[in-house]
Length: 193
Image (tube, rainbow, N blue to C red; front, side):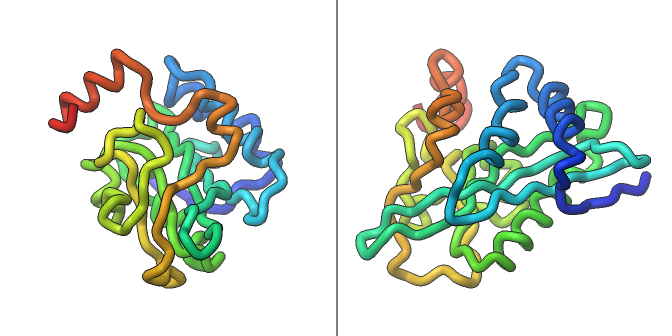
């Protein structure tokens, strides 16, 4: 199967929404995030990448503006969320290809970090480490420490440490961290609860 990884265009909006609805059937708020984040005026342009299979969008990842609240000043960073692959195309490497493309785009934009919350086992394969290892504090106590992850990019400087700050859109959609009982189950699985 041939996949094409390319920048998202405005014409992809409906297909991107459909991918996230299929990938997260129990969390429809995820499908709303890309459009809401694109509407936001921010210092860094929102960047999306899609994976096409047979001419149809099968996966999507988005980078949106966030900050590190460093002692010296606020530092502009990218937050990687959401990442979704249609269930018909999962487990064939599309997610990893999307993450790599997003990291390349973030490095080209000159940001020092890409941060996310997610499964450490999955994202470790793509260069992410717990943010705490880079001097970054998680933006919410509802994100287990190992799940608050980051990649340091070439623009990173040693002083760029502090608290990760997400855009208001994530908070307005209650799309930060996990709520109990899911949080307790995830912490137990990670051995951190």
